[in-house]
Image 1 (cartoon, rainbow, N blue to C red):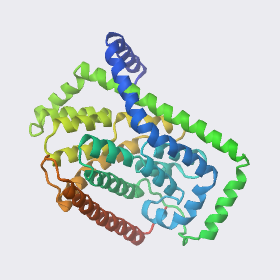
Image 2 (image 1 turned 90 degrees about the vertical axis):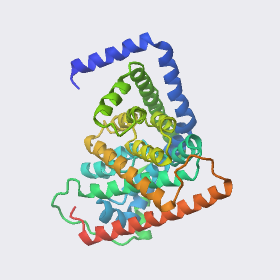
Image 3 (image 1 turned 135 degrees about the vertical axis):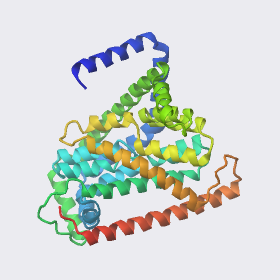
Image 4 (image 1 turned 30 degrees about the vertical axis):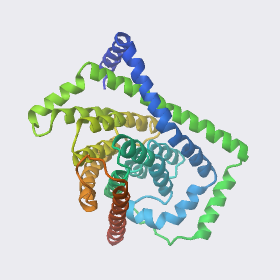
Length: 383
């Protein structure tokens, strides 16, 4: 964006905030309420834990143990497995924060950082199971379908990015996992950090609070932007414009879709209200959560701004994940035989549905991981 366009956009935003102070107050409060209810308790403990684990050398320990899996499948060092694990369990922007940390420490190359960034940013399990499946949809069993679609789509994106910027270079020798070697690497990493545990803990808490407060700022700011866009009917205009060319998609769905492009949580809430069919609800929810929203984009851009990591591959990965997650969600609905009606399901059937969905998703997930591993071994990494 040019400097003139940037000044114009910021001036327009400031004008809107002066004209609609009450709407700005309510939207910012709503964004902070979501942060307080879902993001803070989900992220802060994991941020502190990740800082402590990194200081304890656990990244190096895990890197040695999982090198033989991460290198053939994703063309990444084993240390990337720590980012994958933390990103999948705590949700975004944990993946971006840890990827930037590894890149700043020189543990991964620029290309490896961009590959890692592409598939380590997801909604947290708590958000998918608690906020969306249980809270918004009122069907906890659908959390398995949504989470399986998102996570498996992300792993497929990670596998596709193993072909990203492959250059001829000496092959990395893949060694078998060794607990002894992993332990030695961890002890060496611990020896390099001479801080006492009390200092490590206080630094971890301080860094984590700073990071999670930054996330709160992003959520509040983008909630205000989206509210102003709705007041000015910008999203409604975009939805109407697209509806002229794609009449098969109802206008309320397009409006919800554009809201979700800006802010994922508000898009998910609007999806439940605007879409009636369960298949369509799950499809749009998977698409929006795979895309993640411009609010998350801004968070990721902020966290990698102090590194040389390029942002465009992350955008491509989010587009791919949204599309793949949409397709997988419909596949899981067919395999699990979930009814498409929105009627209330009896408790015994809900338990059976939860187990059947979990079983079907687990088989597909394990089968896909085995397939990716075998395919990667056959091709043999070149970098």
